[in-house]
Length: 320
Image (tube, rainbow, N blue to C red; front, side):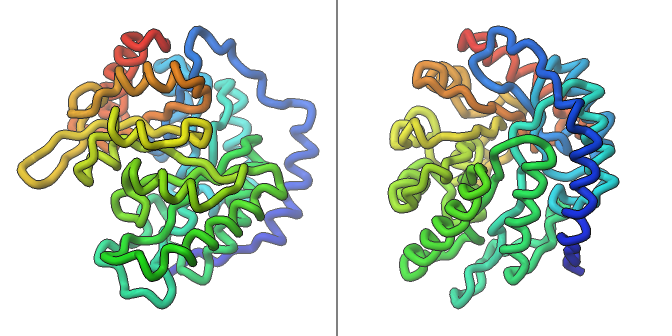
């Protein structure tokens, strides 16, 4: 069943949590030599949030982490005690949060034919269309609680013909971005193969249509590649560089007519070139490992191997 929100009670509890922690703001680690906020999505390592943070900080040497789900609950479903515990763990490992990787707008567009790729609640995200406005509110609450100014979103499950609905979808994205902007939060739209914006070419069109300073792109070359686009340099060349606000890092290989995930550096994406271009173009937000590949035997070991590849690619780009 979809999660039943209790936002009023959550906010009341968060007032006490925030007051109790006001004197212990997260102390940042030295930024090192990377121009980027090098991070990993926590649940790609483990649903045990403490273990994920330990690996990210002490083994991978990261100072940032992206939050999606923990303890088998989606980030927008955490209660006040879980938020307080997560904050304690983040402070223990001196990790800052890049963004809230919410499932906002992973739903069918109302009035349109049901998408062939409609999915269930991956990463604990079993939310109905009617709950999307509340998902946005909760995601913004989480952004405030974890001291970040970014919330990830999508633009509804992919339609065979999105033409008749594209303008209305863009208007919904604009309304959400403006609402987020009122709280100092930026929405970062992920190009996702199962959603209506999947490639760099499609993302460029949406960014041109949704003109808000609080609406940017979560550029995911891996997702673009699975729809046949060459993400770098082709897809990237189409993007307005000042509208890229986040970047997911995973690799892919072609297997006949399909694509499979691969560890960073083990696929078809020119990640060294992509990192060089991001650095050249003045990008300074997150490059966040989203492993997805499961060939390491466990999520932790797969992430460990993919991080080794990512680190080498960053070094090749003189960005680590």
